[in-house]
Length: 234
Image 1 (cartoon, rainbow, N blue to C red):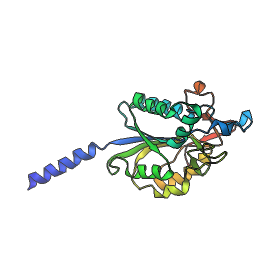
Image 2: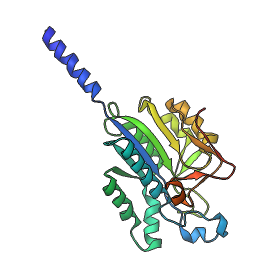
Image 3: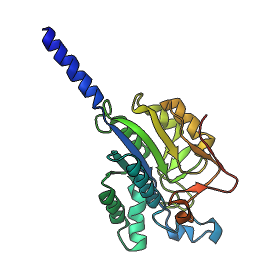
Image 4: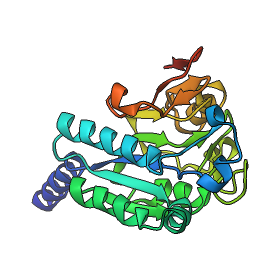
């Protein structure tokens, strides 16, 4: 009996030591040009369909160089890209999938904020596979991630994840030292605090706007807008 108990304890220890982690990157979708053409030139968004794809791809590459073998799951809001398929007369969704194939990440198409919460909570054996990082690329305001903006309706978001939904995140889904950052606008003004209250982790966010233009000058990552700054802890 003692031998059996020892084997069980050893098995538990091996299982615990083999606990896996998962890094989540979330990409919102682009606007439609037909709506953005109604704006003045300096106020237009997403002339390039892949703002939130190219930046996510660059971040994946950074992570894989720093942590070979890292498991990355990429959540992407599909509906906006399906609309750009029609508008651009080519399959941009296939281009998203080509990034998945090149970097060998797990791609999960999402459609609602509930999809994001459900994935965070369940994932792949979430009791064992903790989330080691979470980053968001897309439109946002101080209260929510806006997965689309001027994609379905001009000047409006019809799919989002609001900070009030954070309370539904399951305790223990994230590793205690998980890295969290939003590359969207204004997140640091309210959402970061709500995220910490829900998860125990501070989410780095901007006070002010982030900028997805001139990406090639910034290692293909968003940069902080004029007069804005990052809030790195609360």
